Length: 167
Image 1 (tube, rainbow, N blue to C red):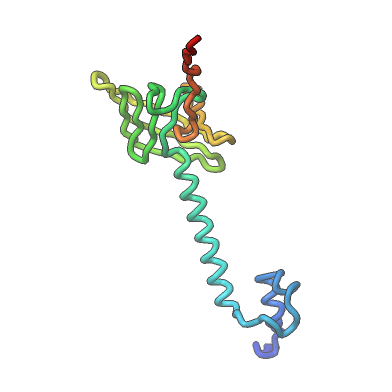
Image 2 (image 1 turned 30 degrees about the vertical axis):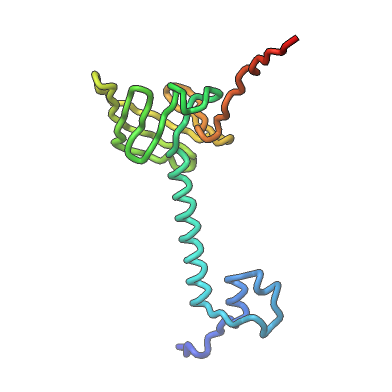
């Protein structure tokens, strides 16, 4: 025996709204606030999901692109431990590297940089791991060096100037 599709039980419109938004079911009375249909809700949901993924991916990519120096060192304007990471290069004191490959490590705020470095006389291939630490610092392997953003390094207070007093 074949049943006509029109005889099949259908979920009520209120039930569909509850599947998409439990808050809607809790906050509205029957017959109120039901102006948005399933198609519009779906578009809004997927649009929000895409925006969230894009913003998360963008922030995940950007954390390592900055100028850093060894933790606790002098400000970056006069510091030979400064290292600047961009999407194409790594610049250090007397050494420049061009990035060949950047690998993101899933589930971690970490990347592997494959690069070719030159000091003007010799050229070598290097591989480094950058791991984002909780305090917005970066651990650099294999050097096992903690880097701090130049923007966060503060000028070290110098000795108080001696003021001569006349007796």
